[in-house]
Amino acid sequence: MAKKRSKIRDNVKCIRGFAHVHLVGRDGSLAGDSGWVENTIVNEGFDDFMCRLLVNTTSSKQVTAIALGTGTAPAVTSTSLAGEICSTDTANTFKRTTFTASVISSKTLRLTATFNSSASHNYQAETIQNVGLYDGTASTNSLFAGVTYNTSQWNTNQSINLTYDIQFS
Image 1 (cartoon, rainbow, N blue to C red):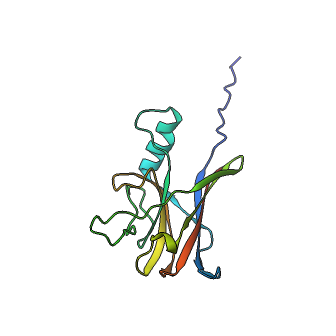
Image 2: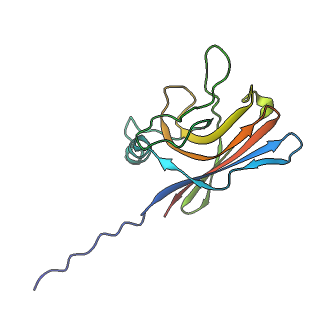
Image 3: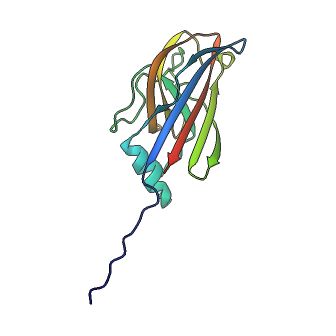
């Protein structure tokens, strides 16, 4: 009698991310809303942030910063966000910010961040249309995932409230 082979079932079938960007005026009024938009997790995102982190190798990475940009969604081979917004100083430093993380269900991680106009994230009006997650604020840090949405004009008197969900299903 032939032995029955048990099928190995994988509980995680999909990892998806979604971003939601709100532009907010100083008076608290909503000036723009991207709606929820699905992201692209890049190859290095799966390799360094997921696979290597799972076994805690020395080259593993963790998401610690969020960036805004003027470009489109990253390709799966991208290592940075197209058109990432930099300051106007001579060092051309990136204007990434940290976030608050919370688990909102057993399979969803939510990151929330604010780019305040008063915090000098925005020195000039920018036409933004993408957002990305990084393992730090330096130019040498790696991109985990990114998303594009319809363009929004980010004026110097506006803040951005950003929500980024990573869902496991």
